[in-house]
Length: 222
Image (cartoon, rainbow, N blue to C red; front, side, top):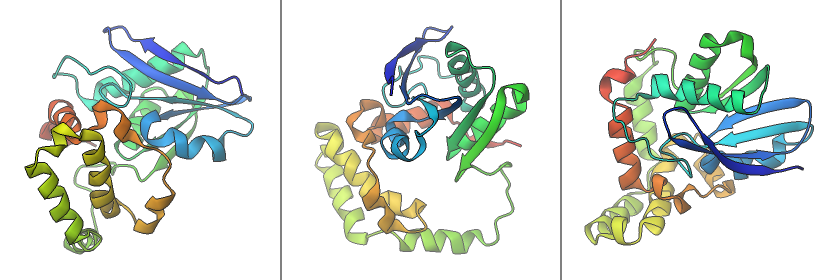
């Protein structure tokens, strides 16, 4: 499949990890290699070249040393750096969760570079999106939680395992809280990706990443 992996040094000195899979005339850039590659490469690779990469501060990419950089600007900049690195004229981009918003911002900024835009459970276009019933949505999300799992995770944290055994704690955190994000929580059993092997994804590191680069004012978007 002519697979390749490596690091792209962007202009501010941060290294972005990337991994390519497959060959073909259709190229697709997919952010979040650590969380999506193992699940998406097999069903999507036929006839395509898939370019996975980790955002700065995530997966195998470098931590951004500057807190002033916000997801709404540097993420778009990094996506363009990936496109330029692979010398692609027009490309399809696929974004999941908040990266769906980043990919949409990229398409708005570089419309001549985007062949197709694929968004999976993206953030809403506006920060004040008109949800039908936010209280009901919250009730459904809470109902998907296993109370015993919540208590087990709390006990692990009190025992310091979030620091002493961060990989196991991270996996437990996913088992407990990811069902909130799923219409069918049982589908999590099919997930192949294990982002917990990367230190950037450990809950205490990830929460610090959110704090630095996702302050409340950055969420006031349109």
